[in-house]
Length: 241
Image (cartoon, rainbow, N blue to C red; front, side, top):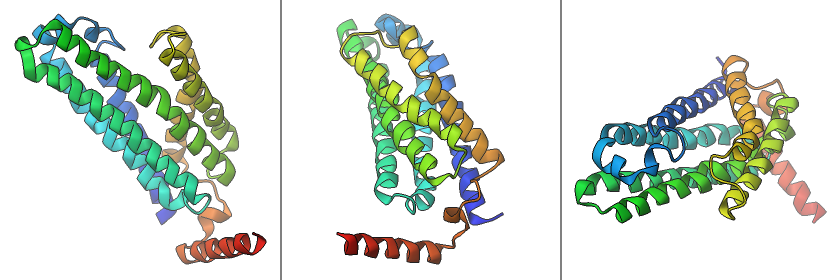
């Protein structure tokens, strides 16, 4: 197995982990805002579900960062600033997830000593981290940046990458609409807006695991050749400037 095939495989595996962690976590919470709508339920009867949900979200944030870190060595030769931006977007998404985890675990730590208003506030923090992280930042990172990098490089079928280029803006728009109260979080409108992004991420996961990267000059070059090509491009850019 070549190093690039191994990179594609690991990237696909980590993307698969994001699905395997996020979907059960949402189920444990009863869907967006369902279990967490009642602070008394969280305080009095959902400790185990919240703990397991938080654990799965911890795995999710690790997998999020891993997808970007694994892909960076390949993507940087296509557009280094964009590849770095993708890593940053995944880190920021994971930061939002971490804040949400801490808010829920804080409710459990306080336990029955917490007032309903305190619990409701911490739960609201978790809800907003979901809206601004997976519900907004994903559109810029996994959607636009990764979609553009994959489309430009031809590492995966461009028809597949188009879903990222379409899904990214839709996630950003739906997240913005939720922020300004135009639509409700988790509404059918927001769910429909996320479909292209889901197709993009699921399709990318399967393609990377099963097929790996498409044969392109970017993949076929050795590390030394990529470095030399990168230097030549920089020199050409400087000369043109």
